[in-house]
Amino acid sequence: MNRLKEIFAFSDEFPLIFTQADFWIFFTALYLIFSLIYKRIKLRNTYLLLVSLFFYYKTSGLFVGLLVFTTISNFYLGAGIFGLRVKALKLTLLSLSVALNLFILSYFKYSYFIVDSLNYLFGTSYHVSHWLAEWGNSISNEGYFTVDKIILPIGISFYLFQTITYCVDIYRGKLKPLDSVADFGLFVTFFPQLVAGPIVRAGEFIPQISKPTVISAADFNSGTFLILKGLLKKMIFADYLAMHFMDKVFDAPAMFSGFTNIMALFGYSLQIYGDFSGYTDIAIGLALLMGFRLPVNFNSPYKAQNTSDFWRRWHISLSSFLRDYLYIPLGGNRNATIATVVISVLILAGSILAFKDKTAGIAISAAVMLFVSLALAFKGMRKHFVMNINIMLTMLIGGLWHGASWKFVIWGGLNGLGILTYKYWRRISPWEKSENRAAVVWKIMLTFTFITFTRLYFRGESMEHISAWYRQVADNMDWSSALQVLYQYRIVFVIMLLGYITHWLPVRTKESIENLWAKSPLVLKGIIAVITGIVCYQAYSASFQPFIYFQF
Image (cartoon, rainbow, N blue to C red; front, side, top):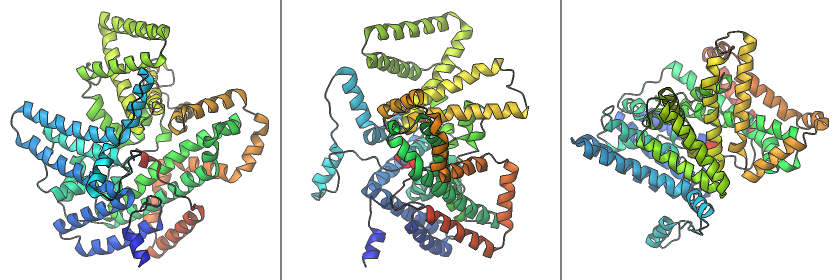
């Protein structure tokens, strides 16, 4: 009886995620029932909706109510946008939809960031009040909600972005609204990708909802292969390395040499790839086993030969979302919009105030005014100015999407600078069009190293920790202890090397491995699955290791 209660009760210490044994018990039971009803489309959709809501409850508790609210409200807003004929009214309703979604996201994700920034800039002492939790407790009289801290619901950035794309695409005439709130609910809540993506476009997923389930042998083989591959990425190349090396270093960078800190940073690049792409692989695999196709989210990102290429390969669903729903509406590479000007002024004002120094403020203002004057004076430069400012704004906002901290804004800005630098460097680079293997390897390693060092602002616990990292690298490399460090963490570095080798394998080799899996008899597949489970179990830690992108 106690075990039954545990199955249906929410535990914030052990939520239902892909690396927990409970999840696979849950999925097995789910799949058995699914196999009995999948031919009846409406029943299948309703069943998957209820299962997805239960899954989210098991990961986020009563925040499932927020998910239901945003689903229902955006369903009716989308229908309203489609039903109106006056463009101004359609735009008003779309603005309401976007404002509602962004308000919810800002309240839960950015309240502390906004208030802390205002207090720092203006010397005020505002504090965040969790009025929503207080209101909820006043209704229930049970004190279900924590009032002293706003807790970020898992996956909120992902599912709110999906509801935004739905309403925007209806406004643009690219999509007709769904007639059934249950079908729309399935689009928003489909559990494999609900909490960490990929971000699914309505136009990609909604047509699948009304189609009968077809699971071919190829789908089964690809799905099971992706699930096993994703588990190995997450459990071995992410969690094991993090627990036995990277977390120790990043928790106290001043306690380790500069060499060790650098190795930890390169290890983190593998960790975050294994963690996030591992989740995506499992999500896509689970969806395939139920007859649904999710978009590819990674394409060997560390094979990128420049920063622009990297962002076409990494978190593809977010990159394309930012391009289509932010960069292009800002004006893209054509012109600046009012939004471009407003956001730029706010960022400039914030930068000047942040220095709290008249000289610095004057210098920043003068530099910006000179740049703008040149852009206005010379037509050719004007286009470059507009295009560059829109790229930078997109990357800065993309950085802020990842986390409510200036660390993430800096990280986004560095990636934006990398994109802009490459844009002009490629015009004069003698190696840009070279197919020479040495030149290609050089470009890949240079891009990979740049991306890795920007990740210091992604992983660093705080700006103080980041400063400590720089001090150790600048003043205490301690090359004499490098061999000792490599030996002490030899298992970690062997796994790290293996992880990067498998990532950099040619596409043809990876396809051959997957084809071998597809051609293997079912018994051999079962044996490999058991061995994979044993390996993952050996790497498993008693301490809960959430997926990194759950926090976004």
